[in-house]
Image (cartoon, rainbow, N blue to C red; front, side, top):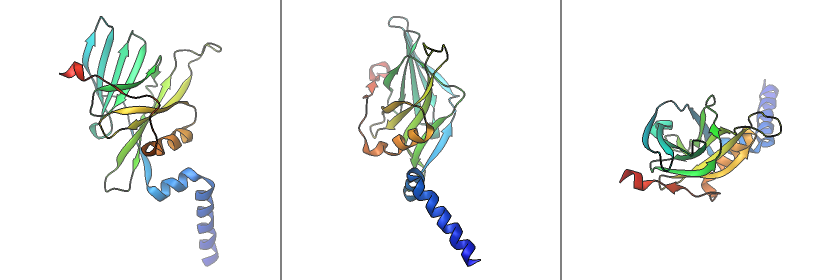
Length: 181
């Protein structure tokens, strides 16, 4: 029995050290929560310039801002302040949930990053739609920013998200405060 327990502990230790992300998750308590984008409300729109701004409910009611302009460009922001980060000539992958990455070290799950799967309209070479992940950092000021985009692998996206509290943004958020004054 003692030998079997020692083998089990050794196997678990080897599994954690072979996968640095799992070891880091176990040490600091990072984990994920998932939501679907189902409850959205149009909060502003215009014909000239052409745009529609939607506010959707994310994890624990954290707002997700979707702004479409020129009927094809998507801008995304996450947080209490109406804003967007980055520019995507694409759309979100509707069938896949939004992944909220956060810490379990407090009594309550606190997200610090969001991973969203996006889809380009078409890949010119194959004519197929190309799918990739974008990682957003949740900022203390109620905005978000893009940390990295065009990520193909879920584990790689989680590694980027888990470093969010220690990284600067690739693109800074644009706030829409004028729309709500």
